Length: 144
Length: 106
Image (cartoon, rainbow over all chains, first blue to last red; front, side, top):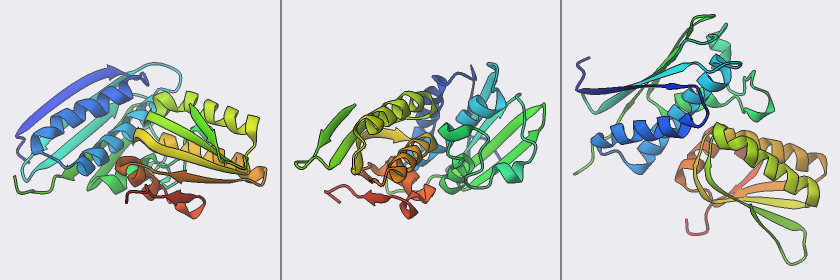
């Protein structure tokens, strides 16, 4: 798909960067004039994906998180969040609602929220190599 | 964290505020649990009117508070969430366990 615009940021897997990541995506997506609700959905999905990198990909160390946004035709935004961390043994299992290895401070709802708030979600992972999450959301046309 | 009691003292309201994500959740969870363990209310309301963002980290906090109150025979409800946190509450299916009260203005 032809790319109209894009941005990429790389940051360390520090929890303080969760707010930065969703803020950066929100500012980039704003060029499509999304509704408050659409922006809220996208920010929530980004927050979940970045939290997964921090909690699960790099549980014992600080690693790099790559966040990429692409503006595609038909008012579609594609968000890629990639790490080179621990990877997921069983992606199907990890995507199940309430599945978590993160203890009682995690709800196991991260992938469920990404799936329900975005139009599509792809997860590629190799144990020991890292995980890539690619999400797309089309911003509805409004009378401007 | 601001708190209030109703007139007969049976209901404790905890006023959550700001952004609830994995970065802030640990200290918020600790504060909520400390208040609940100290006061052991019969009913508790988590007022979310001042919460400007919440992801699934907030669901974990609510579930932990629910489990504590459930074990002591208490009840918990979530109230007054703005639209983004409300979307997360809806997606979580938490309403099967906990009463979710809409803002009075809606």
